[in-house]
Amino acid sequence: EFSARGNAMGGAVLAGEAEPASIALNPALITDLKGSQLQLGATLVTARARVTYDGQTTDPEHAFWVLPNFYYTQQINEDWYAGIGMFTRFGLSNEYDDRTWAGAKNIYEVGVTSVSVQPTVAYKVTDRLSAAAGAEIMYFDFMEGKRQPLGGPVYTDMKIEGDSVGVSPMIALAYKANDKVNFGTSFRFRTKQALEGTVEYYNPAAAALNGDVSGDITLPAQLAMGVSYKPTDD
Image 1 (tube, rainbow, N blue to C red):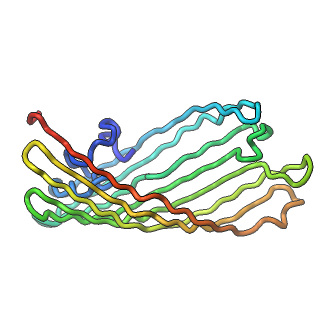
Image 2: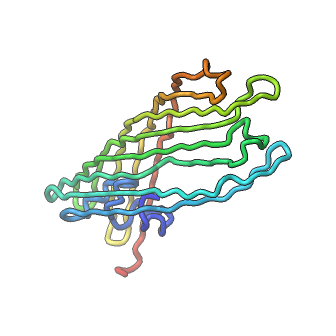
Image 3: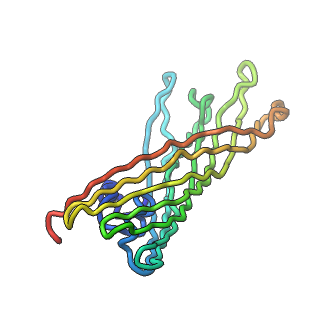
């Protein structure tokens, strides 16, 4: 959900016309953007689900999420271009209003939020070939709540929260074979996140378990390749 145009084209924008949002998928394309260009947008996401667990059925809360994006590109000279983008690559949340249903002992609330800022530089190697490199700076936040057993029929609400910042490089190429056919590829390296946060039990009998927590997660690398064919000028 990096741009309205990318959504409309099903993400098939790695080798087509350039836009400032190309920073998110193939920043090598920004060598086609002259002068200074600014792009803003947002995607509204919603989801519905029904879950059956241990013979009980419940509906998660019907929620909406807004994923904003921002891009700015600047032509430095005939060969060098720079840009910066802000977008979301990972994110998901879910919440169950009924905390007494069977699945609440596993989870009744969960959320993953990420925001990426990517400064990028691109170079026009030849009239047909462009290359780009950038560094993705990603803020990552995790939250989970569930009913934790304390012994026998006694349960307590428990919530874990943590966040971190990870940095990973990105490289990209764009090649114009001729006036009709273009190729594009990009590669994002893995992003390692070392989260630090807290765990809190809401029953005073478990207050001694409250404290600091930490955990690691490695977000996957991403390889993308595309080809575009333009039958006519229109």
